[in-house]
Structure formats: structure tokens, C-alpha cells
Image 1: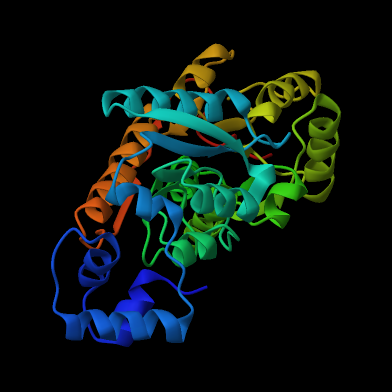
Image 2: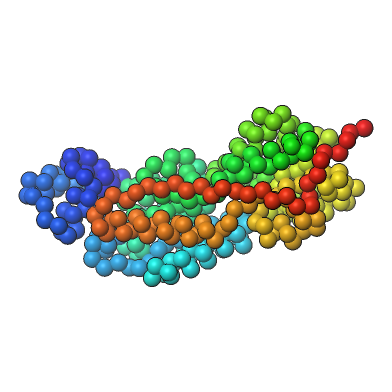
Length: 342
């Protein structure tokens, strides 16, 4: 689909000039206006309703697409959603909640109807199908997540690649050599969820660089699936002395299963969780963890989408932003030097 930027390029003018021509906010020469109209006709460009509304009266609503997949950690997603709502109110905006099930059609509907001045997407996939709709309709948007190509977008996310690398470094530094990475269920990787794939990539690359032997096993996060995952890991690699867990649902079951098998944490097996600090502190022993603040994600995403809304309203090209929040590894009671092998 054709965007305002495509029209500007075709007409040989700036995007702001096209915006002025459409909104009538500033006078432009008839010659320039004719070139823009010819470009619009040639490219069959249809200005989105949201942009037209911004030229007059804003809706003062931001649409937030929230994931409701069974495999996501709902408390974490809700914490981010609440942070978005609170930050939006500081700008005088309300939040319209959409679910990921609506996908590209939901973005298209919001853009065409002018229901919202901007959109924030969560649970961004590497090849997210919603991104082309944002580009095509010129919707002011911010992504909580990072697609493969962030060009023309504003994105904020945790630096999951570094989070995975921190886990590998910590365990290598403690002398572990056989490590298992317990991730999300297969569906998460099949839909190319950026947070899952980037963490695994960061862990894998650093583990290989540090000489770690490792296994990656998917896990649905239930007690039964965690039991099956642990059994397969120990059958395939009985010398495993450390576990990295990204699936929040699997943390409690894993600790129980290790105790039931006669393995004491951290003396016999070290465990690192990629999870919020509050969750790491709830377990016994308290977990060494890698995390980044969630509330800041929501605040920054709102700041980004508001900057794009304001730029469009002023007839300026929005400035792209890419912010990756540095993760922090906090050492607690669940990791220790690798046990000596007999």
C-alpha cells in the first residue's frame, strides 16, 4: 500500500509539504499542489482517516494491541499495559485495548476509522504482519518489541540478546560447562516472537564463544511439561550442571523437580531465570536473574507514539527511534561454582 512518503518521493517534495497540501494548514504554490495531486492519482494514494482527524480535532485515544496468548506471562504483559495507560493519561489520552487476535485487520480498522490518534503494538514478531499496515497507512505508532527491519518505526524493547549473553557469561565464569536453556513452548518460536528468539540467539552465540556445551529445549510451562523437559535434558546430557529458564511458568516446577531428583540448588545445579526481580525473589532459594524494568517500557512507548502524533499534526516527518533497555544480572542464591565431577 502507498504511503504519504511515497507520494512525496514521486512528486519530488518533502513529506511535510504533502501533509500541508492534504490538511490545508499552510499555503503552497499551485504548481506544487498540482504535482502532489498528480502523484496521488498516479499512486492511488488514500490518506488515512487518522491523519485527517489530526489536521482538525484529535480523538485523544491511543490503541494498544495486547497479547492474550496462553503461552505469554500475563502478569508481565498487564504490568506493561497498565504503565501505558498511566503514561497516556499524563498526556491527556485514553487507551483503547485491542487483542493480538485482530492482527493486521485490527490495525487497518483503527487506521481507517480514525478511532485512535496512534497505535502501540506489543508482542512484536520478527516478521510481524502488522508492520506493513503501519507503513502503508502512515499510522503514528510505537512498538514494544523489535522486528527484523525497524526502518520507519519507533521501537522500545529490552535488549534480550544481551540478556541471553549475560546468562552464558555468568555460568561460564562459575566453571559450568554443560548447560541447558529451557525456553517457551514451540508455538512461541513458531510465530517468531522477538523476545524469545533474540534471547536464545544471544545465549547461543556467547555460549559458543565461552566454550559451553548447551541444549535448548522448549517447554509449555506446566508441571508435566517441565518434568518431561527435564527428563529429556538429563537423558541427553546427564552432566548438565546449570539451567537457564526463560519460561516463567517453568521456574517453580523446575526447582521442585530438581529437589525431587536429589539435586540441591545451587550445590548440585545452578539456576538462572530471565524474569522480573519480584518473581525471582519469591522462590527458595532466591533466584539469580536477568531482568529489565517493565514500567519504563510502557512510558517510553507512549512518549514515542506521542512524538509521532505531534510531528504528523505539525506536518513534519516523524523521527524514528530505537531504544533498547540494558538488562541487569542480579546474583542471588541459586547459582554457584560448578560441582566437581568424580
